[in-house]
Image (cartoon, rainbow, N blue to C red; front, top):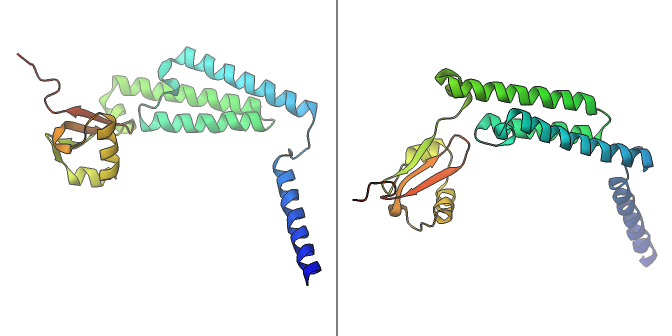
Length: 185
C-alpha cells in the first residue's frame, strides 16, 4: 500500500514538473535567434510607441475617455502580439492605424459637439451639495464604497462635506469640497 502511494505521488510530481517545464520553455525551444528577435522587437515597438506619442501628441496614450482607454488596451495587445510572435510588421501597421484613428476621433470630438457626443460619455453628477444622488449612482454602477474611497482620497470623510462629486467621462471621480471655488470676499 505504501509503495502504491509513493508511486502515485511520484507520478503527480513528474506531471507537475513537466507542466512547469512547458510553461517556461518557448514552443520552438530556446535559441539565440528567439532571444535576439524578442529583444529587437521589444526595442522597435518601444521606439514606435515613443515616436507615435511624439508625432500625435501626449494624449495618444492617455486615458481621458472610453475610446482612449480602449485604444490603449488594443495598443497593448498589438505590442504584445508583435513581441511574442513573428508578426511585427502587421502589429506595427495595426498600431499606427489605431493611433491615427484615435487622433482623428479625438480631433473631431474637440471640434464637433456631435462627434464628442458620439465618442465620449457624459459626466455624471453623483453628489451635489452634500446629497448623494442615488439614481445616477445606480445608472453609473458606482457603489457607495467606491464613492467613499474617492472622498477619502480627496481628504474628505463625510458626504456632507462634498459640494460636487462627478464621474468624469474617462472613468475617474472628481470631488470638490463644499464651498470650494466660491468667491471669498
